[in-house]
Length: 329
Image 1 (cartoon, one colour):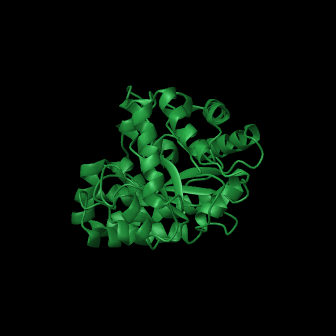
Image 2 (cartoon, one colour):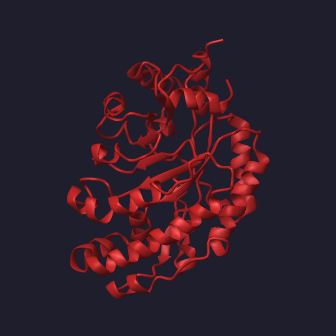
């Protein structure tokens, strides 16, 4: 089977020739230039031949054109620290501007996608990261400021969320002919540790669904990522996506429970910190356990969140070896 056939079998609940596998990471420093990020992604894929490529730009890529600033301070996750926010008072939400998806940082990342697909083996599925409007709002304002405005000035925040959503939809429309397989939709607030479910239903879910319901029909592989512990898992399982990824090794539900509660594919089974600091034998055992939990069906083997930038190659190799051993000739 080729990569798309393997994934389509998995998404349909049928038996692929082997378990599909993919790992992804941030590329600090290289994520500031289209050519550098594209080359890093292509080289990584050529080294490991994963079943799809997840493009992981800095979280600020969709926000720089609003005026935020950030820098990488050495975090081994590869994430950047925000040094300038643009939301300081509730009124600022109403003053966010319309973005042109062909210019600035958004235009740069369209070029990244073009270069990535130009450099990949033909037929390699590619997912582009789209951050939810609420996740974008958090980075525009900061965690504490966002929650304060959500509870004290909700209408102005909703105005801002509408502007962010409309800009995201224009960006997706510009990506429609890019040839990607779909998006990796990153949600960061659907968690009992962050807000109430009622708050997420009001400030998260409507904007999520506006975006997901507008995805091009040709995008056959869309995945939602639930970031953090104690997620609103059952709330998100009704979203129109083909796969779900969450920190299954760090929080409930576990992989078996998640698969029982979601009709598509579950993506995970590996703890990113375990893959980073464990031995190859320990990583191998975790991968085997993930396959056993799911009976090898509707599983995409991966970490529950972004792999750390200093993860040993020996551990990545151990994961690849497990799925290769599952190959049905």
